[in-house]
Amino acid sequence: MLFRNLNLVDCVSPGVREGKAVRIEGERIAEVIDDHEGLSADNVIDLGGAFVTPGLIDAHVHLITPFVPVVTPGVIASLGRQVRRNLRTVLYDGVTTVRDVAGFPRRIQGARRAVNEGRVPGPRIVCANSYITCPGGTPEWIPYLRGPAKWIAGGQAVERVEGPEETAAAVRSMVELGADWVKTCHSDRGLCYGKGDPPTLSDESYEAFFAEAERLGKPVAFHQMWLSAFRKGLEYRPKTFDHTPMDGPLTDQDVSSFIEAGTTLIPTLDVYRDVFEFDRIAQDLEERGEEFLEPVPYRLVSEFLDKYRRNAFTRREIEKEWIQDESIPREGFPVAVENVRKIWQSGGAIGCGTDSGGAPFGFFGFFHRELQNLVDVGMSPFEALRRATVVNAGILGMEHDIGTIEAGKYADMVVVEGNPLEDISRMGRIRAVIKGGAVAYSREPLY
Picture 1 (cartoon, rainbow, N blue to C red):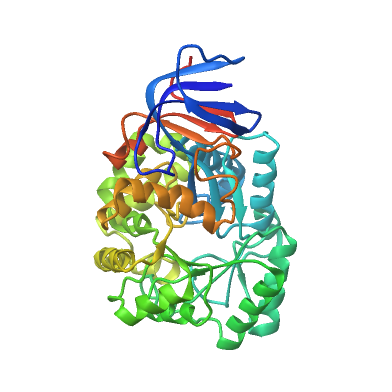
Picture 2 (cartoon, rainbow, N blue to C red):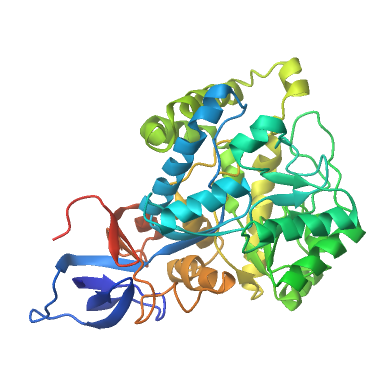
């Protein structure tokens, strides 16, 4: 297969390589060459001067998400269909590889097999299986399943452990179930109305977690959204810091220690907005909700959003349910932006992830918004795009296979309207997605 007459944004050199062609053999790129009329192949696709980037990589998602505030029989019945819809929505958004950092283990492994075997469209999946924390710890709103509910769901989204031995055993269990990464967190402040602050793992349990992860050769994703958590994470030097502190500014010493630790920040700035920008969320639901949500989740999410917009939660609902206090991310978002900016300006490593599926309104299909957030903190469009390609590929240890458009790598490409290096929002105007040499999505026929 040959794609010709394209303007290439390969994420290697900081500019557009005009008049190029990409020859594909099987799943991989055979060569990138100058375009001319004499080029031939069994299947030639003329892209008409379109701009082409590498397939995007989302370093923080939750694919096995039903998008519901409460679990009902209808939700359980629609979970498999919603997961398939999540997979498809991600791929059609130009994201050809993801790192899933909390999900029901059997579900996420089943989704990975289904994608790899070509039974459902979706991105390549690198995963951590269940999130590991203590009883009552963040994310405290995710229930611990028992009996038939656990079997139907495919395990626990959050594995809750007590003490060093249980912690190490949970790490081993996740790896035995196919995890490529393992994930834990530190969060000593609550996000929900009327629930107080959650407990955290003990220092002895953290030490057991990191020691077992190192013994098994698995990198660690560390959830942190508060200054105290950022500083706790620095004691253990995880591979990634996921999210960004929002309760106060990072000090120069914080940033210096972060850089010295050699970790990478995955800011996930857009998920903060997914909790409080209700007009944007309502517009997304109105324009595309039936595209990315099954009927039952669509109805429940719409009803939940309506209550948020009207501030109509009853005292009993606040006491009984886990309802996030939208004022916390609303007030914390500008602080988080400044903290990302400080790390960036100081030379710290930053990747790109959306946390789609990680909040009640954290819908898939809007990856370009996180790219825009990175531009807003001071990156050029080229540097923002590199976070979502080259840098993320390195984080995943897949830099030899994905992240750029070069000979020998998987033929993962995104065809977009206009030049994204002039306007990063162009990454939200996708014409086609090629994954592993095959056209996975095309808005109109490619000739």
